[in-house]
Amino acid sequence: MKIRPDIVQVYREVHSWVGILCSLFLFVAFYAGSISMFEQPLQVWLTPAPSLPQPVDLADAPQLLQKAFAEYPDASSHYTVVVNPDNARPARLMWPQDPTHRGHGPQDYVLAALSPDGELHTLVSRPSEIPFFIDQLHEQIGLPLPHTAARYTMGCVAVGYFLALVSGVIAFLPALKKMLFALRFGSATRKVWLDLHNLVGVFSLPFHFIIAATAVVFAFHEPIFALQGKLFQQGQPVAHGPAQQHGHAGDRSKGNGTRTVNFEGQMPPQAILVELQKQAPGFVADTLEYTTQSNRGKSRTTLRITGHDERYPTRGASNGFAVVDPASGKVLSADYLPGHQSAGFAALTAFVALHFGSYGGLPVR
Figure 1: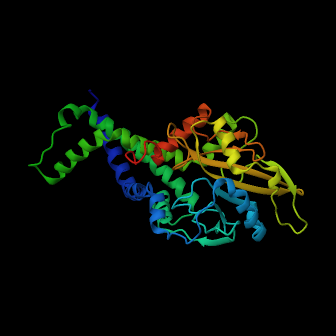
Figure 2: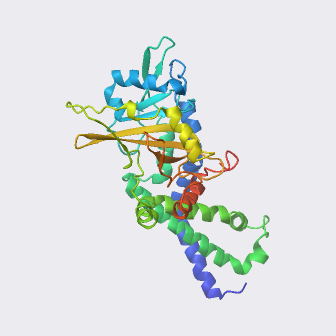
Figure 3: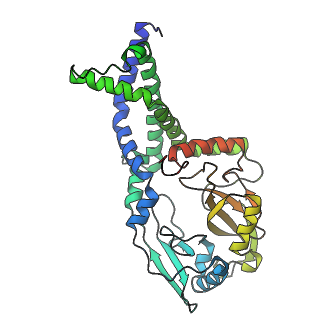
């Protein structure tokens, strides 16, 4: 391919200078990010296993809920039922110790279980902060800035990274046929490194383009979500945090302000999962997260079921979710339910899944 020498020189300079300016940030992001892809196994490894009785059967979860909330009434405002307890989530029932905790950082959870004689046992699980620190190092590229500002800075670095890739390809195209496999090991060290840089760079281009493009989407995901909601969302808006806007009207809150949950108006967790399977076959539920909010004397309970489907990419690092009516088990929002998304949400999910490597299992990671 023939390109004018002066144009090639311009792209070569752009590639060199942008690459130099971005390289330190990218070094931090790449190596911290490669470790953070295994954040969950690291968290399991670094967090001591709690000494709790064996989790009750899912069918007996209502009994556990009644006993736990009789002793800890405030926990009923936000709690999680674990479908298949494991080392990462060792209890059938858990809730945040500090329900007002917001922002970034691991939070302590209260784990609840029943002994064989029906006695309630609870303890506080303190997750290790090391995996979170590595993930924040990856997202903020080591900058001592507020999280949002650092993430936007990383997005700008990713844009520069993409520019460096494009300019490098254009600068190398005229000599591609001649220089691709020309490894001059007997010459100066600088030329050897240049040849290795060209060879590795060309054959890893798809990988690097994916990193650059998905990093931009991930860094600016909040404004993208806002725009996406206006363009593609149907019906009621769905929040991206744990507290959703869909809900089921439950009982009235007590005069002292304590939120309570009317379990008689809700389906048991096991029955909800049966209804969900009818609507989303193949979706494997991991947790049921209940959030109750009070407004004008009335309480509304939202149920968000997280899980995965091996056939489809997921919005998060390891799962997607559906917003479900806790009274009927009907799916209220499938915007992030794998295999049931609209075209717009599925496209954004693909970018996020590519960034997280949350597809193809361990070999892809």
